Image (cartoon, rainbow, N blue to C red):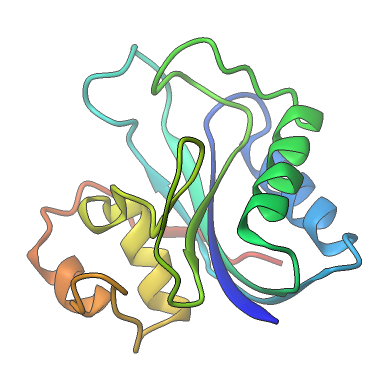
Length: 164
């Protein structure tokens, strides 16, 4: 079994509803057990993308025996079921699910990069990740996520909702 951290975000429609939908879909997968869920954080969209509304973001830790590739297919199926449209880079989305960490594995393929290549630069990833994995460190650099977060300019708002 592997301990995996997933980042989820939504900025279209019923944002909290889409997060709940994705967590519920993952929870019902026989080969996935949810270990922890962060609070929901509201954040502005990335600079450089099209004009859009703020995101709600969470991080989950899960336990799974799915390979990284199998897990990617499962989360893409969840995104598709949640009406995810992939036509604009950094565009608005009903649900976005990223594999942030898969144990301490380092994977770089045409379709998958683990650890997520931008996670150390994103407060909307590090704030909820540090909440549920305070002792965690990046498998390549060895930098503690808490230390990386301390160096970021925080754009995110305070936690807005406890995830239930």
